[in-house]
Amino acid sequence: MKALEITGLSKIYKTKKAGVVNALSDLNLVISSGEVFGFLGPNGAGKSTTIKAIMGLIKPSKGDALIAGVPASDPHSRLNIGYLPENPSFYDFLTGREYLYFIGTSFHMADNLLKSRTNEVLDKMELSLAADRPIRGYSKGMVQRLGLAQALLHDPEIYILDEPMSGLDPLGRALVKNLIKELKAHGKTIFFSTHITADVEAVCDRVGIIVNGELRAVDKVESILEKGITGYNIHVRTGGDISLFSGFDFTERDSGILEFYTSRALFKQFMEIVVHANCEVDLVEPVRKNIESFFLELVEKR
Amino acid sequence: MFTNLYQLNLKWIIRDRVLQALVGVALLLLVLVPAFSVLSMRQVQELSITLSLSFISFVLALLAILLGASSVWRDIEKRYTSAVLTLPYSRGSYLLGKFFAIAVCLVCSAAIFTLVAAVAISFSSGLYQSSLPIRWLHIFTAVAFDVLKYVLLVAIAILFSSISTSFFLPIFGTISLLLAGNASQEVFEYLTKDSVGVKTAKPLLYAAKGIYYLIPNLGAFNFKVSAIYPVALSSQGVIYTLLYFLVYTTIILYLAVYFFSRREFP
Image (cartoon, rainbow over all chains, first blue to last red; front, side, top):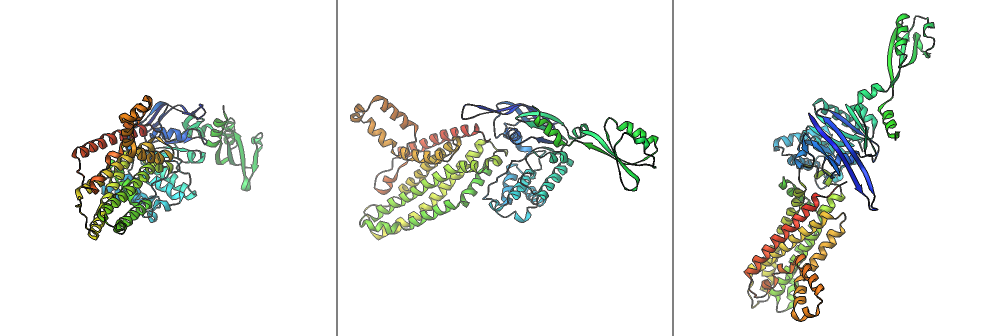
């Protein structure tokens, strides 16, 4: 089932000097249910514009977006969405608990369920102690965690998170990554934007890379990592005769272990030699380009 | 859904320190009414009614302008809109929730002020016996129509907020319309008097008529004279003003929702 379907989405802004800015050009994207999709791009690439169009904050110049089959322009489409805005800001005259109560009632949650879920998400986001303090006294990281708490509160099927790790310390980032993994384990769909490639590598099933308003690539993270293998580091325990390995660079390690590097093309030939020489293989480790290299190649490509 | 937003806004208004200060000032002024009224020597009762109605009107105007003009603009400025407008609410519910919360705040504030004013007027009238009776119904009617006038002003402030990106238009536009609306009836009557109409250039006369019908006629909401002096309250005037309020406010709110629904929050 399609959780999110974006067809030909474009956004053109008119500038004051009668110029135009193509913030988004003909974006086509389908996110399946239960998928964790990372929307990666440099600052100003169009990530937030896409999310704002999906959430109804801006009207696309062309194209449309469907949320679980319902047009994004219909407020009911947001009933099954947990949304975290970029650099969130919430009514600061309310306490964290009061704000969550407002969110819960906005999603028609029954009173008993709302109370228990509020305590649950406050606890999960480590905000229980600050729950009855006005939001105006919260730190940036606490507001970000409250943002995640309000997105989780009504247990939606789809999560749209705009830079969820922004403004968080390493502990907070780990918390969010674990949360995304946990949500995925429960079959939830997560669409999140980021400009940090390590976040994508850590939690995503698929990644879409957007540059200058254009979607440059969409692929499985696993597949990108596999395609990016350039060679292997192999640790071999030899019987002493290393003449068979002439032509392969190696470093001698302690206890008779030789550390070889072989390119992807020569890997098969190398392993045949290993079998022929009756050596013991201690470790085979792929050497690969990471998502960052892939991302940088795409960004630099004109 | 709508009540949820309405309650949220009511909470904001009640917790707003500026509002609390304004209500405090209004109550203090009303408590001082008997002291000010005795300065008139013989018209203590009449002056106490005039002062009470004027203080109430002044504070309600301040509340209407401050709350009406700042509510939407403040949400945009503090980026609350990106959180609240992405909830399953229509833009219309968001605006109407604000409007009704402010309207209820004006009604409640006016009720409290009227209660205190009633005590102040009763006390003042005891200080120097007036030949005129206190017409409580007329006083309550005058306050009620003042409330309606400022509720209409809140709708105007919200309309300006729905199209403006800064607070200048909502604040100064609303103040300008308050001043123009209070004077529009007199200006219109002056210009359309035969003696003046002859001298006034036709295009100017048409423009004045256009503006008169466009801007709110806030002078129509003024029932203070019948509250202070023994002038009969016109039931026709009351009904027409009530209908005018309903029609004008509905149109303004419809326009506000129309423009706000098309607004973008990049």
